[in-house]
Length: 414
Image (tube, rainbow, N blue to C red):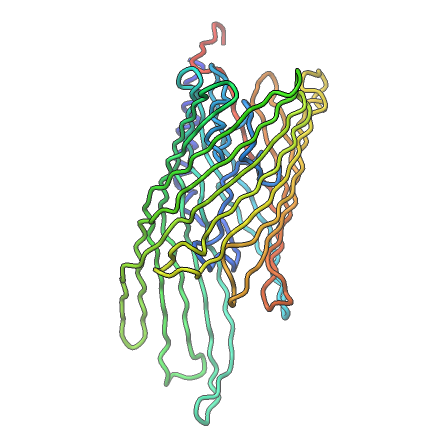
């Protein structure tokens, strides 16, 4: 059967992805704070459009950023999407410059129709990533001696997100959806103090672990309004209630003796709101814009509030297809452009910092198929040097494949 080939591919990629999702996908020192670098939850197409998603609705992509979009799937379609990316980072401080690179798994998801007006999606992706390693030395005055000390900081791990979502169109112009998310993973932070030139003093090491295993949900809505004969306006929104998270903390300090602190701290996932709009002009042009807000400052982190900051993000994007029915391949390519700016949920040295990104992408149709190969190129930065922060500049290259085929369809001839 035709569908069996795709099932075999899905199972193979799922096994690979379960292994890759546990690996860190960042080398940023900013991942030292909070839960690490949070992932947007968007796929390659969304990332090419600056990260928009709340008002995005299409029968050719999976969009978990708003579960209400799942009803856009065609009644006989089976959709499968997977992606990965590589990042090239440069870190600049007032004293030095350093380059690093990394590759990461981005997502794996499928979407199918259930009954009339109902769609379902399942997926696996990173929720946050932690990965850094740096050190510095300094000389301290201790009594009458000058003491050389070395400080080392390392972190790895992250939180993965497994989601299942359902959407139902209660009328042609209104779709409602919900995602149930299971967050799991382990974050490890290590810091060590040593005395390279003096054996009199004992070194000390602290290892902090967060073990995450918790459920969250987010709800979405999309209002679809035809404009004239060919255009469509979509207004969408999502909401996540502030929710206690099941996170276990353990801090092990080793010096002349080992001390374990397994205090039962409290952690919250913040109330989160996202709103977006998209306007589709025929089959050629899509404009979209998003705004999101997460009240991290009101959420408990190690049983304290105001440790983190409220996060805000604004994103815009545009897709252009010259002629989707043309016999010329170049005319059927989807050209994408986007940008975003955000205020981070963490602070460094008690100072907030912002992030920005500019994106470019292409959707390359596969021959004799509705499936698409998606490419994404993103330049972004976070932090500024004149606040005694490290400025991080990065270039990310993303690759995604959207398989869109008929569901339960047998070919008469192979």
